[in-house]
Image 1 (cartoon, rainbow, N blue to C red):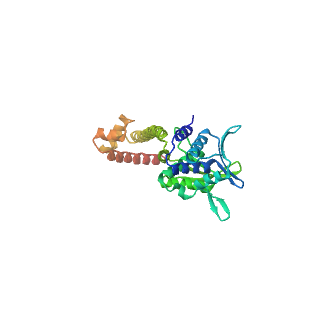
Image 2: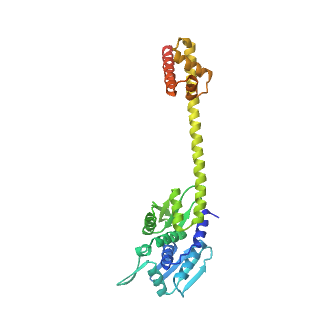
Length: 311
């Protein structure tokens, strides 16, 4: 089973005791996978996954004493919950902040009213419901990515805003699916995805996520260190080869005995130890690393002048 599925199954067991939190989570589920109409009145929650269906059923049963709740396993895949009595439809939608009574009757809201998420606990519940109905999270062994896929921009921006209340900086983009625009609220930062799991109350998945993240971070740190050391070794070897070539040219054309004592010592040390680093030579000669480097530059200048004179 996928990591995302494991998170949702854990969240299925997370049921708040306060009615306002139940309603906030249900409101998010309706926004994510609900089918709502006022003419004629209709409220249906349709999901492809059994987990959000079960959670919606639990929330409806605990928060409302409904008489017209129909459950159905859709042929070909999916589950459906339908409320058929108009008064009960308006009761649920009104409680969830998804309709507003006007002089001309009822009017649908593009996103739940702010009163639904006034409390911090309700904001957590709403994010949990939004994830159950429209969210997914990649396997952290592969890459860090969490997203909420919603059909309306206002709903995607509400999730983004609620995450921001907890210091999580999410982004919203438009994605084309089946000739229709959908809106995706997403995160790609591992530490912030961990924060979202904590916000939703998915603590077992959070521990698993963090274990994987620590192992990945250590592995990446080791790889970076190995790559850095390999690059340094390549530079040392390349420099040593070039210095040896310069010294051989000077030896052939002038003779090392013609060099000043300091340059001759460095040249002889390099020929004796072609793979030695500057630090190794500086320790051997009892001079600073910068002094050794300076003398090699002098040898390079002599070798370059010999090459130019030959040409």
